[in-house]
Length: 202
Image 1 (cartoon, rainbow, N blue to C red):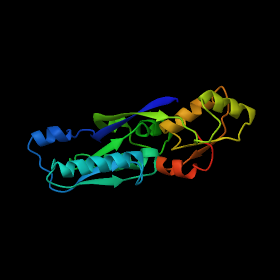
Image 2: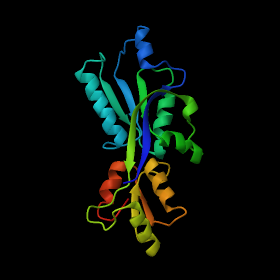
Image 3: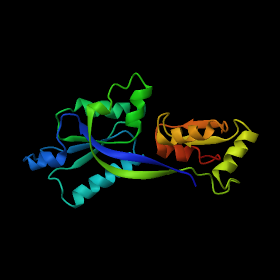
Image 4: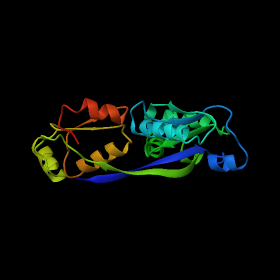
């Protein structure tokens, strides 16, 4: 099993105080608090955001509802741009992963960078596991790479967007040892696992 680690961070627009500090200063939300994520329903950030919203409601941590806002598209660019538009609004916060950092480095259309946001706290440090189907003949990563060398372009790997952690890990496996095959990239990690489940994948 081969692992890489990803980080999920809670952030607000630069120049805005963290929610805890705002509350300490006497701020009380007057409308639902938006929790922005870059994935669609069922994506990793979406699942975590909805768990947080449910916890906040159960423990009565806010006098208003926390609403998850899905802004998928552009490998995080759409979500980060939406959050940036809310500058000065303490009712809007976001959950971001590494794609919010890497997309502006690879796409001229992504105008919002980390400099425009204020990270508040690291919520998750999660491992990324390279896995194959249960009935696949590969027991180690070396087995998969050896098979890829024997049959170039015949194996597939699934993952998220070009700048996502899973794609970066997959690409690192393909260079320089072997071209492990074709990549299946999808807009959300949840759809990646579903749509490539019929094929051997990493």
